[in-house]
Length: 398
Image (cartoon, rainbow, N blue to C red):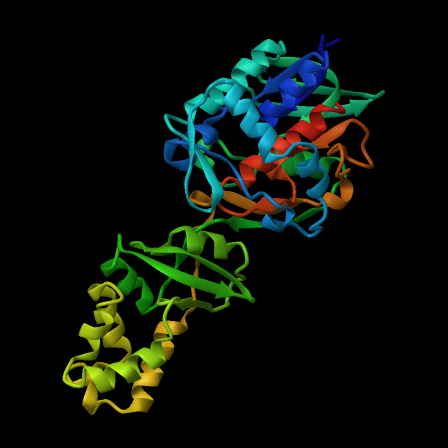
């Protein structure tokens, strides 16, 4: 008969949510084992925020999260909020700063956040095993038996903190979803979130020529809008505005871009016709936008009037051109997918889970936390806060 080493709690996944849950359970006197398939834990923490880790946001609200049940996240966010995490960061004397929109980043390195989590795990006597592949999970007599590449373990409480499918080079797999299905939980269709758009039409060529150019815009789809930078890339468009919008976009839909969100462009152009009658339209618009972008739009929308002075262009044409700047409609062919996505949308259906403890309602002592479930935050530290909040919630009950 196979010998199983015993732990009170086993956490599968050594990312933000898994580590946070582990030491919170350990603080309550539980013996805790964290298993991770990578060669080291916290890889996505280290690469996040350009290596500075956008670890939370000052303005966290339930409205910053997408889920089939928008109320699900409220209990955990209340039980452990951004201020409690900030206090922990300050206790560990980690220097940090606020960027725009309440985003908090490490001054030095994301390594500071990972070191803090590992120090807390060490204090709570959490055991961490890496390079561990899960081969089989069996549930019987109120215990979970795990067969792995590193040996066999048994536990009373099993926590799934495996993350989503985004950035497979960081070790992302669908293991958490497979475990959910094994125990009869419903999965909502997963797609890449916080991800750049790609194009196959002429917009791809324009984007390639403008690659590296950032523009302050307002983007919208399905009555949801974001005001942020848009970045042209070799494959399409990216930047904070686009990543945010990607969570709300469905394949086949057009997106709307206001290139000059602070200006009523039609009124501006009609005024210019009076005050700058001898000027060229492209030169006037280049006072407000990159000339490279204006020239691309000129080729698209007013090539026949490119060399006419303002006085020679009809009001109707000026109003039509203004409409393209205020509501530039583009139809993405798709997204860059999980390769570059920051998160996975949807996942384990929260109807199966307790919003207070993250425990499965139909499978005792099985918990799901973090990105694996159907809770996805906006860009800007919100997904890390969900990792901390959901990890803390489960850590009080396992």
